[in-house]
Image 1 (cartoon, helix red, strand yellow):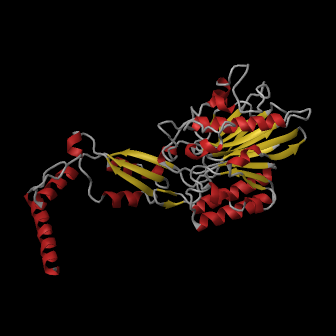
Image 2 (tube, helix red, strand yellow):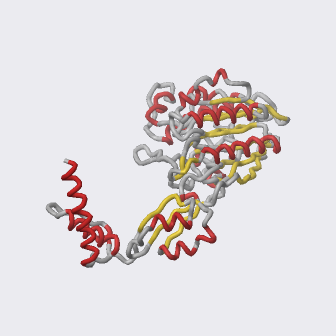
Image 3 (cartoon, one colour):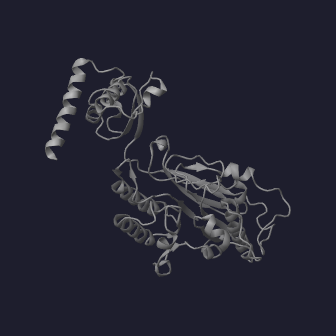
Amino acid sequence: MRILHTSDWHLGRTLHGQDLHAFQERFHDFLVDLVRTEGVDVVVIPGDVYDRAVPSVDAVRLLDATLARLAELTTVVLTPGNHDSATRLGFGSALLRAGVHILADLPGIEHPVMVPDEHGDVLFFGLPYLEPDLARTQLAGEDGRALARSHEAVTAAALDRVRARIAAHQGSEQRPRSVVLAHTFVTGGEVSESERDLSVGGVDSVPASLLHGIDYAALGHLHGCQDLTARVRAALPAPGPRAASPGADPAADAGIQPTAWYSGSPLAFSFSERHHRKSVLLVDLGAPGDVAVRRIPTPVPRRLTELRGTLEDLLAGAGEHGDDWLKAIVTDRSRPAHLQERLREAYPHLLHTEYAPEGREEQAATPHVRAGTSPLQVMDEFFTYLTDAAPDPAEHAVLARAYEDVRTARQEAS
């Protein structure tokens, strides 16, 4: 069985004000073509389909059109992430066309989507983003006591129920293979600046050891494509009795070597992702224990570049980076005149500018306006902060004239 793993589309998101909708449409065209040419049997999307709980009309229309196109070619299984609204994303899921499965509710984690192939059944389980304050009561044990208020506690309880369901399916000669879609932060994953913090009480991650007994963990939340398989396998519990939910078979996952990946986001959403190689994953599931993963690069709209240096240094690099989305960090000791205009002329796709003068003492970079300071004195001090030099008599005269013109205009207006 061939599975395509993609996540964190964040439909409706912008990059420093740059509208990404057209580039997201391009990615969706690429995705549909890839499903067709590679003969993909199932597409899995573990969360953050939308960028916010109430998505834009354009985002909803794009998802609707893409799911309709994919449904003509393959089976789709998706779950909500922490950016999505599980209720809104899951609305009408029972009425969707055949082949599209939105697993958005906690009771549904024990009811997998079952897809057979020549090696038997593959069970697809969806763990929506588990908000501890809500899930700790819904996933409580038979004694009715709420779980600890942590991501680890609610994820462990959910996965115990998944493993119990897998064990209950062990009636055939071949054990069922399992794929779990989980939107969470597994310890050891590499973060970027664009993921929303999941921390509860300072703890935002779940240990890799929780992923035992699963053939493939299709992870969502982190935006960099990364393989956590070695970390998960190294954290597997030692053989022997293991605490689990009632009905779970501690021996059912014996010998299973989990494979776990984050597919990452198909587009970059911050300059911290400029070194990412954006991808989707083709996962081939053979007989039990046979899992192969292949990265397929996604279309990149523009290269993301961060340049640091004096304005003249940055302008000199326009030949190499003029077509990039640029973050410019300008380090001139004195703020250059017409800074934005000169950068924009050389870099038409400039997205963000920071002024970080080098060689200044820290106090000089953080001036404070003292009580009783005259407006003209404040202007002089601001001029000094920007240029690293006090205004000369001619410059002071210009500031004084500007201040008097503004004051006169306000008096006349009143």
